[in-house]
Length: 499
Image (tube, one colour):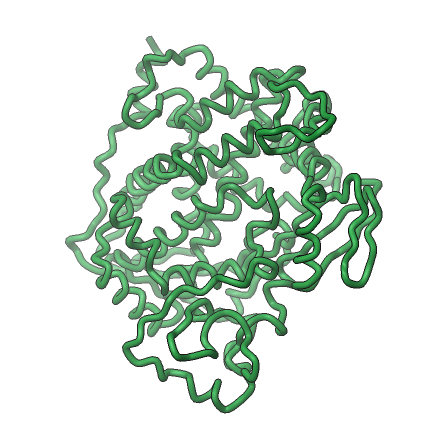
């Protein structure tokens, strides 16, 4: 991309990097991804490149970008409102309702059924549910296999980012074109049919745009100079990709780790009993789940272990001075999360009992009176004291421990551009773990080597198992079979479209 690249590692260096807030800018990376992965036109990409006003309400000094062209700020504000702020509960509720309806169609009973791969089984209904939560039912009316096509597109990401030509991976470019066309068709229908009176006053949803999040995005992006319907479709194509590519596989890692360990499975089920878990669609249940130290520790440990993302900054207008180097202006700065997450000088391993390349459900739990518990390596952790503390907690209840990790725990990136979807991700992943653990028995029918990760997704988020994960599944009890009570909204919309 024509820049000198510096890779920054180490807790102290990351802490020093935070002192340069103007470095936290990534327009080149954003535009590269939008153009390469989602087919955005060069004209539309140029509007991103020319927006130097920043993501905050107050524009950076000396910028001349018009208010309606502040794409960076306006889209980030929209993200934060609906994925972290007041709109989070609504998006999550719609996802949970849609997912429950799709799980009902899987017809899992009390007898064991066998399936060839865990990801192939769960990812389609999870992706479809997310798409409907965002965009309503129209998208899958346009193309009923949209979620499957999106899942088929994911493995080509590295090849596309490397610029592999069309004649070598024609399927990738064909999928990109068809997915972009599907999004554009959905948006054309929504523009033609939507009326303000269609908005539900309670939920804020409508049958055409779906969520208030997507409807507001259209209002923002349609005002940008030089953007057309193709530009907006490419941008929303990126939304559908980003909302599913990392969250759902991470949710499935919780299932893998919990069901691999019978003792951990018993602990999770006991935790769900203690918090009176009933289901994923009730806000009180969600609130209780979010306060469970064990479930939160499992969640954070998997973020530590299974996320390999490179946060990329630009040094912009100023030099960066770190403890052992000077980074010139205009350079790219890369901070790899994987190295930070496995730094033996920072993380607790209980004197090597729980290596950093292995899952340990309790790594983020701190027990009162045990200085050798918690995620950070304690002084003297190689002593007999650390060894003697194992299994000595009795009935003492632990607390989730995250303080002091800001410069070494970065699964969602660092700085002001930390992923705005992190609040939704936390809800979905913990919720899905609770739902599956509570409702189903699962047994894996493969060797441990199948759970090793592939390098195909290195650097772009959640890693995936190298091999297929065959399994069998059944309901834990006959009286908790899922029944969908959702209205057939897609059929209602189809009838309205025909009129």
